Each structure stands twice: as C-alpha cells, then as structure tokens.
Length: 478
Image (tube, helix red, strand yellow):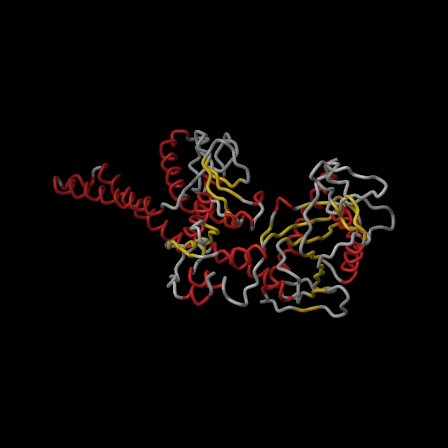
C-alpha cells in the first residue's frame, strides 16, 4: 500500500494530464485528470482529505501510479474520458451512477453529422466519453464551436439559423454544396475528441508550408503572377490556415474546465465542514415556491450532484389551494410532502408479501418499526433521497421541513437560507437557519460553502418562477 512519502518520490510533474491508479496485478483501478498532476495525486494521501467510503476502499488497493502529460486542461479532460471508455476502471464506474454519465456524439450516420451531448448510446454514430461532469460536456462543446463551425440542430431547418449568421455553422440546410468542406470539419472534430490535437496542427502546418512553397515558385517564374487570382487565393488560404492554428492554440490554452469542476467539488466539501454534516453531500435538493397571492401557485425541486446541477432530476409541482391556504408555509408543506412520499415506500402491516426464493421483501422503518414495502412490488418508481435539503425561506419554512422529515422518520440534514425582511440585493448578507437554533449563521460572501448554498437556492427560485410564468401564459391564452 502506498503512502504519501512513497508518492512524493515518484517525481510526478506539475503539468496538466491524466493519472491512473493500478493494483498489484497491474489492473487499472481508476483514471483521473488534473491541471497540476503532482498536487492532485498528492491530495489523495493528505491527512486532511475527507474520502468517501468508495475512495477509501480504492486507496487500499493502489500499488502503482502512472500518468500521461498533455499541454492543456481540455486535453486532460478528453484524455480522461477516452481512457475511462477504453479501460472501464471499476472505481470510475462504482463512484458514479451510470445514468448520469454523458457522452458527446458525432452522428456520422447522417449526411451532415451533428455534434451534441447525450446520455443514451445507440448503435449508430461515434461517441466520446463517458464524461462524469455535465459542465465539462457543455464547456467542451463551447470550445469546439469556438474553433470549428458545426451542426447541432436535431432536424435541418429550411432556412439558416443564428449560428450560421454568426459564423458558427456552415448552414448546410440552405447551402448543401458545403458538404465537402463540412466533412473536413467533422473529421477534425473527431480527431480532437480522440485527443489527437497534434495531428490536426501538423496537417495544417504542413499545408501552410506547401502553399508557401507554391507562392515562392509563382514569384520566381514571373513577377506578374503576383496579381494572379491563383496566387491571391493561395495567399488567403495561408492566412486563414495560420489563423486557424493560432486560434486552436489560443482557445485551448485559455480554457479552464477542470478548474471549474474542481471548484464546485471543493465547494461541496467546504459546505460539509461548515454545516458539520455527517458526510459530504453528493445529492443536494433545493425547494422554492412561486405564486401571486396564491394564484398559479407552483413549487420547484432542483437537484445538484457533486456541486453541479442535474437537470434530469428536476421536478415541478402544481399546487391546488382552497380558501385560506395561500400561505408560503402551507404551499411548501404541500410540495415537500408530495416529494418525500416518492422516497418512502407504502406500508401495510395487514398484508404479507411473499418474496421469491432467495429474495427478501424491501424494508423501511416507519415510526420505529420495520415494515415490508409495497411500493416496489407495485412498480412505483422511487426517488433517491438527498444528503442535504436546502429551503428558500426562514424559520417558518424550516420548521415545516423538519416536521415532515419526522413524519416520515427520515434523518436528512435540512437548512433554510434567507436574506431577511426587505433585503434582496446581491450584497445583502444571506442567513442560514438550522433546526433547533435561534440564531442564523451569516457566512462571508467569499465563502465557498455559501456559494453552493446560493447556487442551489437561486436555481430553485429560477425554476419555480419559470414554471409559474408558463402557467400564467397558458391561462391568458384561454
């Protein structure tokens, strides 16, 4: 088993790249990426590091460390994704839920291939990944678009869209004659996603030298040819290719994807420390409501995983109110109750469930007693429980959440965050309320823990308002 002293002697470079952990048999256990390989690898063995149970198990098996250096952050990210796809390391798979993995697909089965993110793998097309971060996928696609114009629309429209007008797509819908040019672009995008940036650059540099050689030949034969259209065309090609090479290098050097991902993960760790949580919250749920005097009342639930929004897990609730029920606390109680029911199986002590041979009926604790769960048997899809609940509100809203958690016998940390009466500015201090505590916690605006709390709260607020406005528009159209 490796310790920090042995790791320090490995002379790991302080450059971007991918690191790989191996067991005694030489089998790859885990693949990671880093802006600074040495710092990242050493962080695993520092005493202050708070590992998850899965990572602690992995640490016991690590016998060897290898690494591959690259030039930029985004290349480290792509290398990590390609190595995970190739080797399927057990701890990369065990630490993340497969359904959350995202891929970048190039739909090579189409005449004009699309480039887009997806969570499903079909038989057709070329896939790159898996990427363990949704933010990483979005940023990679942005980077590609800054270098190459590509198609992302699900169906070719009849007229060119905004992307074509700003030079980010060739507009194949109106100009199918651009196919040969677009095929070259797609082949370069595929090479880039495969981690072969240098092949692209070498090809372009070789083409530049060939064109420059042709230019000098034109001038040596007849100076009058300097004004010839072929000469001018070559000059433009050289200028454009040089710009492309410069742009590729510049974009890649100034892209900070890994830093952003690591920052969000660090924010969650800091949050666990500040709030004294029993463990680092992998799944955080945020709740808010939106209405106008009880009309078109709605609630929202947003989900963050490892500090990043997981929009596939978002849920929205339409609230039906009777007279006298238009209080914020009543509406919050309504949506939280409906949400928690989706994680607590129905029970019935009067019925016995006969499991199949070798199986046991699922069990849940209600009121201190273990009872057989009927929901799984009835085919009801249960929602995963969060590690932390964040409510947009004050003590009143917090008390509602606490009572409901007790009702369902759930031991989940919950906090409420509020700016206080009349304080809604960006610089107004946020107050964090804890169950059973009279005084609210005020965190510095620079606090990483506050950053993640505010991001969850603000996203829940945005999602609730969006749904509320949708309902209002529908009512106005009637």
